[in-house]
Amino acid sequence: MAAESDFAAVPIRLTVNGVQHEAVVEPRTLLVYFLREHLGLTGAHVGCDTSQCGACTIQLNGRAVKSCTILAVQANGTEITTVEGLAREGVLHPVQEGFHEKHGLQCGYCTPGMIMTAVSLLEANPNPTEEEIRHGLEGNLCRCTGYVNIVESIRWAAEKMGGKNVSR
Amino acid sequence: MFPASFGYVAAHSVEEALQLLTEHGEGAKLLAGGHSLIPAMKLRLSSPRTLIDLRTVTGLRGVRMDGNTLMIGALTVHTDVASAELVRKHLPGLADAASVIGDVQVRNRGTIGGSVAHADPGADFPVILTALNASFVLQSTSGNRTVGADDFFIDFYTTAMKPNEVLTEIRVPLPSSGTGTAYVKLPHPASGYVVVSVGALITRQPSGLCALARIALGGLGGSPIRAVASETELQGKPLTPEVIAAAAAKAAEETDPEGDTYASAEYKRHVATVYARRAIEAAVKRAVG
Image (tube, rainbow over all chains, first blue to last red; front, side):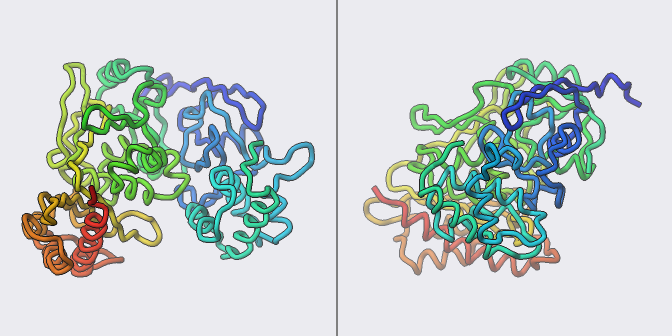
């Protein structure tokens, strides 16, 4: 048996939704569990847990990633945005508003991941075609199969944002 | 799902990573983007005692040109390979492959070095890099060595890398003018991994004859397989649809794939001939100038 000290907990420091956090984590702690259980940010969901479904999608240093396939220790020194960090002073992000306006959710399980991927998609491509939206969502699964309204929600958001890259 | 317990240490240079590899011995694994390793650890298919994180090593990211060689840092993520201007301009076949790996989020995190070192038989990079005659720079405490793709990929999850080596760079020779490259893939509809894929590099002489053909097949064995019969068939011939079709028909000749629940061996061999034609046609279309 390995000695406990071989698997020593590791100190990390990271910024989540603009707030700096310090913690000491077991190396095997996955980022999504760190966010949910240590920081209480339960917006990122654990769906398939195998990097297929995208329910755990967050932004890490500005890029959409699957937080079930990243170790919390790998996020040391990074900046993270979760779905909780999108609204500003009670005002929803246009993508969140779009999902509300166009009924882009049924059970809601995939929604935070869909929204985070869509936010990244619109940052890279502010005026996507339907095909580009669908392609951009390849890493997010909706088991209610509500893709039609999800795509409409994102189109709505793109129009609301005026086809501009709105960095928030 | 959690991985089994392990120790974690971040390396800040290749030298430090090599030292840590020596220190921690056989139970240590190098961690890049972790998009092959972490899933394997969660399934307990892999249970390293120590992870040596390369994320904090500087100088292993990005795409640059050195003379006639494209140098890709091992920690460059797929998204950045796919969008690099140098790649898109000179080796569009590599951009093809980089942009069909996994999904957007996976491409934002997975690295070319990790994919190559992991050598999954369903991965995309090994196939196109074999077609492009890439080579891999392996650093150890005794220096650097460079291994060509034909010798690097040995079998399922097996490469020529030794346990005390770090893959630092992927080198892709720039093809001569008149060369086109392409990569086409039949993905598994659920996993996105390769069922069958084909990478092609075709050089067309001003006369219209084929000066060079390198064609690699994925999904038909433990590692990429060169479609030697197809390459020979194209050599020195005019690149007409008939010649391409005849060459592509021979693509699966020297393969003996395993069938599985999704695709029988016969189906894979057939798809290889169809996708070989598509890859050659796409490469020929790009072979201008």
